[in-house]
Each structure stands twice: as C-alpha cells, then as structure tokens.
Length: 254
Ligand code: PEP
Image (cartoon, rainbow, N blue to C red):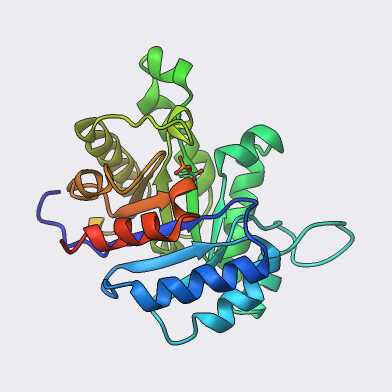
C-alpha cells in the first residue's frame, strides 16, 4: 500500500464543547492561519454551532460535520436530528459510531448501520469510528473486533456508497488518555481495516480513507500521519486548542 496517493484529512471532533461565539473565534483563527489548504479539514461541531460554522467556512478548504444523527428522516423522535436535516443546512460529514456514543448512549452495531445508511442516502459523508477496548487489546483480538464492527456497519450498504465512508480507527483506551499504539501498530491495523473493506466492496484501495484517532497531538501527529496506511487523523482534545490544531494540520507540509 506504500505507493497509494493520499488525500489527507484532518477532522476535529469538538465533542460537547464550544458555544457558537467560541466557535466563531476558533474558526476565524483557523481560516487566518491554516497554511495547508491541500489538507482537507473537517470540523465536527456541536449541533448548535453548525449554522455559524457553515457560514464562516463557505469557499474555504474547511468542511463542517456533525457528531451524530438519527436514522429516521423525520417524525416523533424527541430530541433527535436526522441526516436529512443536517444535509439541508449544508453539513457535509457526520461522525457515526463514536465510542462515546456506543458506551454512554448504548448505540449498537445495528443502529450504527441504520444511521450510516440514512446518512449516505441523504448525501452526507460518514466518518465511521471503530476501535478496541484495552481488554480486547490485551486478549489479542483487535483484528477480530474491528472486522466485526466493519462488517456490521457496512451490512447492506450499496457498494457505490462505500467510498463516501471514512473509517476512523480509534482504540478506545487511547481516546483522551495521552497514550497511543506505536506507529507500526497503527499502520498495521489500518492495513487490516483497508483489506477488510476491500474484501467486502471490491472498490479500489485509493477510494478508502482511513484515519487514526486517539490522543493525536502536535508532537506525535507527524509520524502517525506519515504511515502509509493512514490517510489522516480524527482529533479530539487537541482540536479545541487552535494553536495545537494548526500545528497538526501544518505538520503535514513541514
Ligand atoms: C476522539 O474522541 O475522537 C478523539 C480522537 O479524542 P482525543 O484526540 O482527545 O483522544
């Protein structure tokens, strides 16, 4: 996979942080100081920040994503937001299956599969998060866990839509912990993920984007992003600090 051309993507996951005013300040700074328009930047912001984020990023290399959606288009589902509603206001990406949603909101593989299909049918690009627990890592079943998650997530997804899914490999134990697998492990696991998708879909390897996520910061970003099977990063904590996030985006050209 060493000769694949990469279209680098850095996605920030703000989680439940930043008011619209704070979002405005951060995005204006990002627009001013982002020296790397070749790197696709996606900001996955809280729902209430989406309108301001979209209006500030028109005609830039920054795209806006949501962090979740529901799988029905409309109806009596109090508190939910559908993929269709996100698309209508200009959202391009949606994170689906983040481990925090799987753990705190009991999201199942089946619900994640429905959300993916709904998002793709609405014309959104999906950032599908998968990853193993520390226990699964210690039991040497990382590959098995990820393959099951991928197969369940992509169940009956039309082959023509698979290129609109970006897979983020996020070991659960690495999220927010300051710890990461080593770069060779990250590369190896991203290769397993790529091969799994290739087996399911027969689309070309170039069309599959795989991100690494979990404690990426300005110190480790360069070597992680340089791995041949890594097409970019999903950045949580460090995306909230604009200086740190800019260093991660800009490290790819330095
Ligand atoms: C995440 O939760 O998607 C994430 C990558 O978090 P962090 O970078 O803070 O580990």
